[in-house]
Length: 192
Image (cartoon, rainbow, N blue to C red; front, side):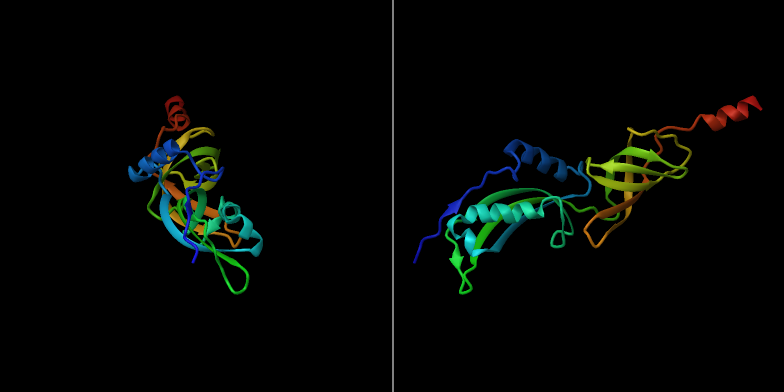
């Protein structure tokens, strides 16, 4: 019986130890709304072609999930830190290879009630569009008499999250606080 050999992974799909510590601290402190961390041990079924290099097969599998909605996590995988790969794969009767991995996934999985911050991209009469984490669009209802311009940062509370069949998230929210009062209405009243 072959002995099991484990390999600790480093690849372009992972983040550095310092980045991981910073990210983990910010998630725990609540500074990164909508972010979740998942520790996973999973068995992957790889193609027989991956028998010569199961680690490469694992990396290909993990990369396929990056920046995509994954139902298991109910969110979009932003980063994966492969902690360990069992490099003594089990060959199944079908010829496919079963490999166990241990990984830490960082996922954007916003829920109703989470607070997010976004950069304003467009301003309408009573709604604004903003970009969250430079990646996700959100539609936010404006509260009160505020004046915002593109480029400003706004905090909002998520009131709904949905996704398309293609896995694209739609985040809807309402502003948490009004940042600036509109001046143009008050000026009109003073001049009349």
